Length: 292
Length: 165
Image (tube, rainbow over all chains, first blue to last red; front, side):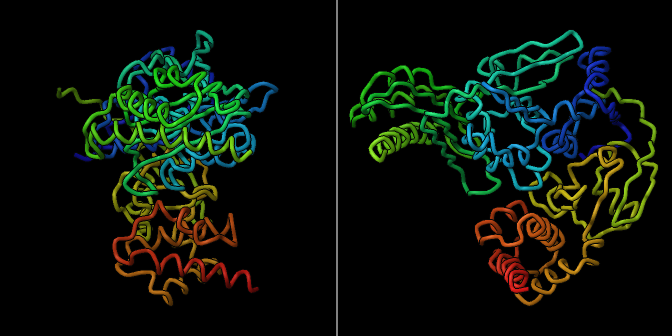
């Protein structure tokens, strides 16, 4: 049933301290809403449990990208358009730039925010594997202060996060230490635009004489949370890329993911595609070194 | 669970719609789409899916393409909004309208206002888009009639005319 607007409250405090004060006053009572691309969908369908909402859209403190010497800091309120249009993100973190362009159509990219996407915690979100492979850290903020946590531990279960009831994500921090890595991403979905992925891979690798010095792999839509493929990475590090290794990586990745059957695909298909995407990445990583 | 919340009060929201300053008493969580259609009788903005997938409810908010079904009206306070009704006064939009007619880019017409707004937004950012650009920038607008070819052609035609000037 359609939502009745009269049953909901929305306030716009206008600054980060004012929002944090409200959250601290009655933790868990107020649902933050940024661009509304997730919250409003639930609301319109009459599925939004929260009745009191606080707008964090366009807070200046959350809508900035700072290019520091050793890292870039992306405000959680930056939209996917902000991310796509950032030259420094395109240059240093190309996988995030590409994934931003895959996230919904232009109108949703103009409103959807990276912080909102993280907190929404969909295991199918295309930009989250990119954050995992770049080993992002999140700056969480509340009236009590700030804390910095690794993004890899942020999602604790299906749509559950480490965020406390009075906290917001303030900043996504990305260390600039992957510029020498070969970067690769691949989305498999029913169609190109506006389609939620069946499987999405983000991968970084660095070779020396065909030997893998380092590799980082992460996938969406293959587990309850965006998944880092640590077993497969461990298998690959220090090895020379050849056909037997590629085949072993394929079966290791297919076994490491924990996909489910849902409306978009089946667990069996997703596991097979996960293995194939890792194999494809290894072939391209090797071809890229040859071409150099 | 039948716990019902006390009804919230209406609040005052002011914005500019198609150049005209407007102040309304509305519920903060009313969708901008509903306020445009029901309070302001601007019915050129259509509701298709109501969940941000189809682009029929596209409007420009401070020059940016948005889905008005996903915007609580209080978040539009102070904004400048342009709907299809306001766009048709602009010559670039009239060119798009003409090209849509000539190329057969409209059939049932429900997607057309959103398509024109998305195309206008594209051309204002990138006057000479490639066909790939047009396909990508219009991917958030669904059409169940034309098969898209005529729409892409109509936008490409306006871009070509712009280049020739």
